[in-house]
Length: 540
Figure 1 (cartoon, rainbow, N blue to C red):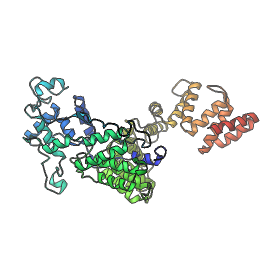
Figure 2 (tube, one colour):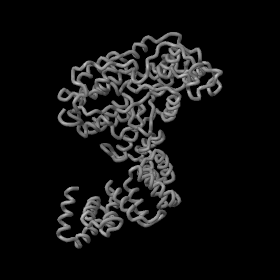
Figure 3 (cartoon, one colour):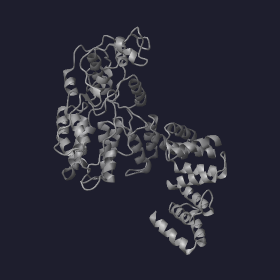
Figure 4 (tube, helix red, strand yellow):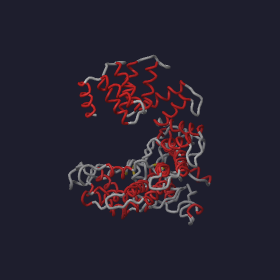
């Protein structure tokens, strides 16, 4: 592959702008549950691990074991297990390998993807609860007062957990097929699952990923193929198929074969999915986290959205694969679909449908979707009734994640009294938070506060610094305000040349006052100043 990975290629693999999923109704709650388990001393495996590895990790945790045991005694569902997610690996495929080709194979560690193997031993809650914060007391009871499952072996707890990952493990009503292992069953099986043991001890996928991380891409390919042939989809095979697809798509230089890459990506993307057993975790602060199936669907959506190296553009197929990503629990996919219908990209514009997708993702706490929905509700659109109070509510939800657009929108709302009662104190607070989050408009607004001495002490130097921050980040108002201070020498040195440059840049951004300001300033500039200004503009 010549040169560095191009912008289009990076966009294809990164899955930019694609995030949430409809079936994942408890995903954010699951994140809290996961945090609870980690707080209690349990390290979860990386998402590339076989799905059963999550059960192997959880089975070591006395808190999880106690919940499973109590659920079995009561004949109810055990604690929910959600699939872990991970950041996509998108290396520079043109970069040299970190280890010379032909070097000894990396050795797979005794732990698999961050968690130790487990297939023997009894959980001794009496000896471990004192080390697990809040798990129980000296009498062998859990914090809730329910008896701890002190006699359940780790194998038994893991086997019951793994039952949730078996094909058709959901209820007949969901799958329309007879349930294999009842999902309601939360107790011991009485024997070790030898098939799961063989999968858990597999070395092919760990070695393939280690080679991939060393940028030994061609050498990693046969290892991924061995893993794909050995491991079932949903037990590492989908992860292997994803990497094979990425390698063929753009990771093998001249030997890359995008059509073959698409075939493998489709295999990963269409792996069996059951909303009960396969719903992934979702972290709204790191929305790009994904599963193998979700990532493959995102890449396919991006490939067909614009076409790529012999793969023809196909907007319908693009939307189909983004919808598949959404179906498999990748929440940001709803935001991408909403954007396509809102802006009418290769499809008739449909604001109502866009708002429906945004609302799906917003309810699962994706900040960018909350802001997109709020913007539609704020002004209204075809099929979307204006509702400013609801818009403010969604802006508030996104602001909890320090989303800069939400913070800035709330600042202006309280500043101008739009949709809420004007509140100068809250407005200033939101402007500060938005500025710290990187909002250029908020930085310019803070400059105005300091320039006018409104709610803060008048400080021309601070005003000029904030105007410069906003201008540097592309805010046209900040450019004009900074230029005005530079022309007058307020808050710093007089600089007519730089003021002219800022005004010219504001004019290109179609700031209404900038063209007249440029003309007025030019009448006052000397020939030497004009020449210097032109040279400065060229440097910018």
